[in-house]
Image (tube, rainbow, N blue to C red):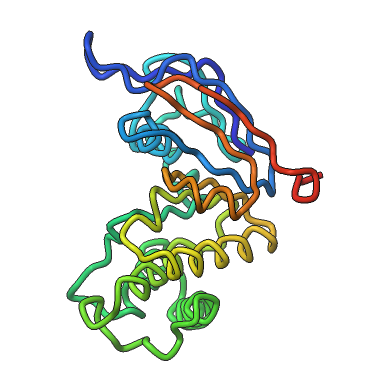
Amino acid sequence: MITLTHVSKQYDRIHTALSEVSFHVAAGEFIFLTGPSGAGKSTLLKLLFREQVPSSGEIQVAGHRLASMPAKEIPPLRRKLGVVFQDFKLIRTRTVYENVAFVLKVLGVSAADQKQRTFRALKLVGLQHKLSSYPLQLSGGEQQRVAIARALVNDPLVLLADEPTGNLDPDLAQEIMALFERINQAGTTVLVATHDRSLIQRMRKRVVGLDHGRLAFDQPAPASTVVV
């Protein structure tokens, strides 16, 4: 599903975010990407949804070769991806329903289908009763769940999450990770960037570690949770 081959990202002659990173993510896997601040986690995720391009190396995601991808192929790639950010990136002047349905509206999905799929996504995260609320009327945990619903509304093959629990207390963080696990069990490939070691230890998934832009380790999941 995702393959990085000798991927490097250099912003200038001094600042190198990633250096010769290679690993593979199989369809249906759940992987944590970890490392200290500045290790290159966010840069790697930006490369995966083609916000940035690598300086060298090759990236393949869901059948797309990203390094040489022409601009016209970026929208089809992103239709296969769901992305969740630490700061939610919700539109404050739009309701919960409008925030989640926005992706479908841009894609030209019919109003009836928008309604059905948006309600389904909000029900999945337990917020179907908040359709008419605005982001600032919600708690931090609720806002994050709206962001997750928005990422899932188009039934993505891959879910990418950048520090999705960084602004949440431990109990809420655990709820969000339990939700990601249910999404993964339904067949979605999940890649979560986090520096929360306690969260990683509780989840017992494969862990890919970065340090100063280099692949530091690739620790497989315990045998009972390995994807076959």
